Amino acid sequence: MLKRLPLIFLALLLLISAAAAQAPRKKRKVLVKPPIKAKEELVKPEAKTKEEIIKTAERPAPPKEGLLGRVLNAITIDTPNGPLIPFPVVDSSKDLGPSFGVMPVIAIRNRATNDIKSVIVPSVNYNKNLRTTLTYRHYIFPDDKRYFILRASRSERVERELMAFYYTPDVFKSGFRLSLEAKHWVTGKPSFYGYGINSKRGDKANYSLQVNGEEIIADLPLIKHLFFNFNHAYFDKRIGVGPVYTGQVKDLFPVDYALASEVRTFHTNRFSLVYDDTDHPFLPKVGTYASASVLYSNKRLGSDYEYRTYSMQVKHYYNYKEEGRFVTAAHYLLQFQRGDTLPFHAMPQLGETTGLRMTGDGRFTDRGKFVFTLEERITISKTPFYKFISETEIAPFIDVGTVFSKVSGFRARDLKYGPGISARLVIRPQLVATVDFAYGSEGTNAIIRIGYPF
Image (cartoon, rainbow, N blue to C red; front, side, top):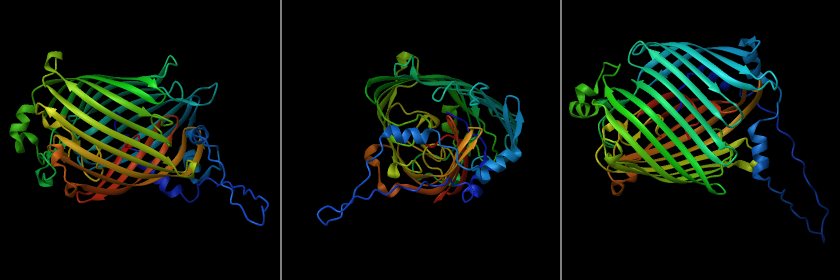
């Protein structure tokens, strides 16, 4: 739900800080027991509880400042309300090309506790296809779990956005989780290449996608860690001419363009059974999230299409030696549709933000898809910078995925592989700034985003 936030400068700082900013490791105490009957005993230390893991992982103890902290302090401007960090913006998109600009990050702290209560991130940047883009982002943290986002953006060409989002994991301390979103969004980034895993890169065609509507997601607790999830969404969608003139859907796929360029209403309701014992909704370090769901669209409820989308998903976070420094993260997703054939932009897609980071958005499109991703998230330093940027992380990963017209048509030989590495800054209490570098049969790609990929 979060639009990409260009923080390449932060990532460069992250990479050069690994050696100097690494948190000192505590020496383990060795327990030695006297020999019993002339025979040595090996005593395994008792495993930490999950609560202890979470306690140490949620907010790290302040170590030495390190290189990253010194650099951030050098470029930071102190104000009465909190720090202001003027970051330069350098971004490169496989779909839109390079962009550059400036993005001040303004952290506003609670004067009573000195914690950051909100972050304001305006920016101005230039891209040859979009021209100048002005963006205002406001992240509000009432506490360590609740979360508000307000965002407005406008480009000289095509792109614009108005969005409001709210999330709370514990309504009235009942365990009831709720998120609300309303948005008007026009993006010129995605492309269409045709259908199926054998679609050709040379058929790349740009378009703009306009979305207007709202979404409500509610999780009702059943028993411990088990939830019933309800997702209601009502959006009007249409496509138009995109900002990239080297190839347009209107010209290369005229039949698909004619069907998708008319405004269509998508009123969907998704019902899911969810198991979730992860420690944090946005910054997980331990636990499992698993769901099985069916999304239902019916013309009698106001939708222009009648179809169902089935999804099965698992996310697992394994804490190596329960120390929080090495987290193995795995993600599995199987998704397929039944019913009416939808416009291509509403079908399952595999690409940059949908499971395969080595390629652009919308690279593969069909009625179903399979995704598997494995990451090793390694904390390389912990920086107590205004309690604002508190961890730096690198994460080698591999993405594996494919699309298919029906589940029985899945073939292992069709799988696409995309290894790579991520550099990240954990911004407490809710955000992660990520730079991904991926490569594979589709070439190389660099992605800048907010949030973990899963």
